[in-house]
Every structure is written in structure tokens, then in C-alpha cells.
Image (cartoon, rainbow, N blue to C red):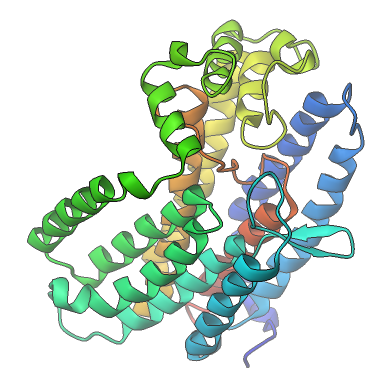
Length: 365
């Protein structure tokens, strides 16, 4: 069946994976409340709670979908994703200097978040059809072109953070499919060269972010402000934190985007090192169970799909935490399940639902 759950499959649900995702989502609601309850939008935590509920519905729907039947429609998914991104670039309203969201009934839908799932399905299907044990760069051509086109459209919004999430997805699936290490090294060198060549095409604010990452004091009240304030918040948390609702940087509004991209700064300041370890422990548990599903998958398609979604999510977690700590340049990349954002929560939980679909059907005919 393309949609539906056999009663016997309920015994194979990874409840640890579901529980870790749910706990992280509820921690996110609590931290969003802390970051916004004294501001102009004190009800954002309630909206996030509703979005988590909607995301759980999406998780169940994705788990009930046979991932093999979904992969059979990979071409349709890809075309729909590309059309949605083109539509955003042409007709979406300009919000904060970017075109990323489609406004539907007061709700801002960000198609690029869901494109990550579609890309995982498409790439998993393409590599699952390869039968040779060893792959070279030639075998990476068409999957690379497919992912590159989607990444280019997303980068044009501009949203380099989300576009970058497609790269580890492609690499991990290709590696599992048998891409030779020599080809991996060659591809990395090509990407480094391509990155250097894109410098003249970066917008001024993107170049400024890189400059201020290297030296925040160049613009301490402008582009370097986020990094400086985030590092102050993280450093002031100490071992056990200043206490929930008592962090000065977060409560007084010194941290920009504190309920979205920099929610981890609020957590680190208020809950300290202990809270950071707890949150990262939950993420490790989540990612471990997702990778376990890839190992247990009944076929190459399921293994590649689970691994690709896991790689994209892992990259997003690592980059956001490193960004908050000042180790990488600032990008508009939310922390999955913790940051405020309907599209991010919905897409993340739906992706986890697809991984559940892979695990639940590992014994199916």
C-alpha cells in the first residue's frame, strides 16, 4: 500500500527516536518562551506548540507512507520542488531582504525546507538504481546536477545556509553507494575551487559576515554584533547557567534572532554547560537512532534515504551550534526542533517520519 500502516508494523516503531524528537521540540517551546515572553510577541511559544502538533501529524503521515512508493514518484517530487523554488524567486514577497517564504493565510511557508526531503528521496532513488560496487565522478554527474540546480535556486533567494544542507546529503549517499575515495578527494578540491570563484558573486552583506567572522571588532555594532553577543551569552552561562528566564543577554534583547537562529545562545546562558550537554545528548540520541535505521534498512533505497536525511539534519545541528560558539560565519540556519519556525519544524518532523517509514517496513514483503 502507498499509504497506511499495518498493525504489525506498530511493533517496529522506534519510540526512542519519536521520544527524543518530541522532547527536543518541547525544550524548544520552553526556550522560545524564555526568549520572547518580555518582547513584542510573547505568544510565539504558543504558535510553536501548535506547529509542533502539526509536525507530529506530518510525522505520522510520513511514517504511514511507503517510502518505496514515494521514491517511484521521485521525478514528480523533483519537478514540483524546482517549480516551487522558481515561484518563490519570482512572486514571493521580499521579507528581510530575501524571497524565501510563500504567505498562505498569514502563515509563512518556506519551500526550501521541504525541498531538502525531496532531494533526499531523489538522490536516494538515483543511487539505488546503480548496481556497480564502485562509483567514480562520472556516476556522480546527474545526481550532482540535480542537487546543484536545487541548491542554486535556494542560494538565489538568497539562503546559502539551506542550500549548503544539500551538500552533505549528496556526499553521504554517494559514499554509501560506493563512491571511491579518490573521487571524493577530487570532488572536495573542485568544490573548494568553485567556492573561491564564487567570491565576486557574493553580496556585500555575505562578504561582511566572513570579514567579521575573522575579526568581529571590524564592525562590533553591526555585522560583528551577533557573534560578539552570542559568545558573551554562551560564556556567561557557566556550569549550570544563570537560571531559566534569568539570562541577561537573552532577556534584555542583546542577542539578535534569539528565538530563531540563536536560540542555542539563550539555552547556553540560562542552563549553562549542563543544559548544553543535555541538549547535545538529545541530538546525539536522535541522530544515532536515525543512523541505526539506515543500518537496518531492508534495501539500498531505504538505507540511502535515511542516511541522506540524517546527514542534512546533522550538518544543520553542527553548523548552528558552531555558529553560536563563534567558530563559523553567521548564516540564517535554524537549529532543528529548537528554533522558532513552522516550516523548519514541519519539515524536520516529516523527515523523521520518513525514517520511521524505512524502519517500520524493513520486514515487509
